Amino acid sequence: MSRRRFVCGNWKLHYGVLETTQVIDQIIRGLDDLKHVDVVVAPVMTTLFAACNQAKKSNLQIAAQNVFFEPKGAFTGEVSVAHLRELGCQYAIVGHSERRRYFAETNEIVAKKVKACLEGSIAPIACIGETLQEREQGRMHEVLTSQLEAIFSVVEHATLPYVIIAYEPVWAIGTGKNATSAGAQEVHAFVRGLLVDQFGHVANQVRILYGGSVNPENAAGLMDEPDIDGVLVGGASLKPDSFLAIAHA
Ligand code: PGA
Image 1 (cartoon, rainbow, N blue to C red):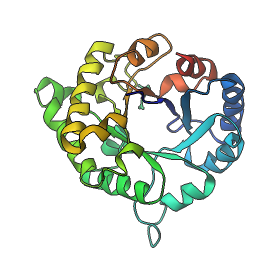
Image 2 (tube, rainbow, N blue to C red; image 1 turned 180 degrees about the vertical axis):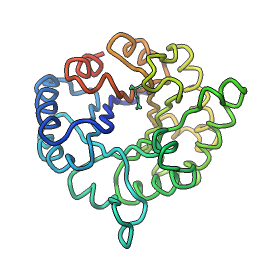
Image 3 (cartoon, helix red, strand yellow; image 1 turned 90 degrees about the vertical axis):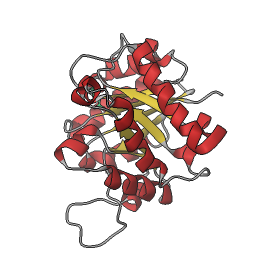
């Protein structure tokens, strides 16, 4: 089963409009003929309008770092799936560990966001991952299973291929301590197994990304593994050269 590779840069709370458009310009120029990979960046919310306009007619695609699950109403400060769609945004990162940690996003909230994305034709990049403590307590599989079950509860066979799962062990994010390729593959195979148990063969169409201290040196090794279909990159995606090196890996 061949799944199209997926490389996504998560710019977190970094560039404003000016820097975003400068960096996107360099990325677009560096992508030229890279047609067999989905290359995506997720810039700050206020830059999405400019970023989406700039990326139109290029190989670069744009993701939001977050989205709200309600379509409209008295929800001060929130942005809906339809708002993202209107800009031309194709993806939204949902349930990143920083959102779970600092913004109290539970599995239930993550599931609602995944559901809203699928209903509104935005492909969710749904993040899962265990903390160091959970791993050391031998609870990794239990934690990943409950995170995935929440997501599975809102997905159907027909919508499953649009879901992208990002396995990001929390202890590897921004720490420089990435999982080894073999270690990450083991977890990805476990995730794939749960997907297959729940949905059958269509699960083989789902892309599972690895995230956590990915850089130009380790990206190719990770993506050589059979169940690692791409990467979600934080720090190393901020510089066009290193992000392009990862995309070309
Ligand atoms: P990192 O972040 O690459 O800086 O570890 C990854 C992420 O948070 O998505």
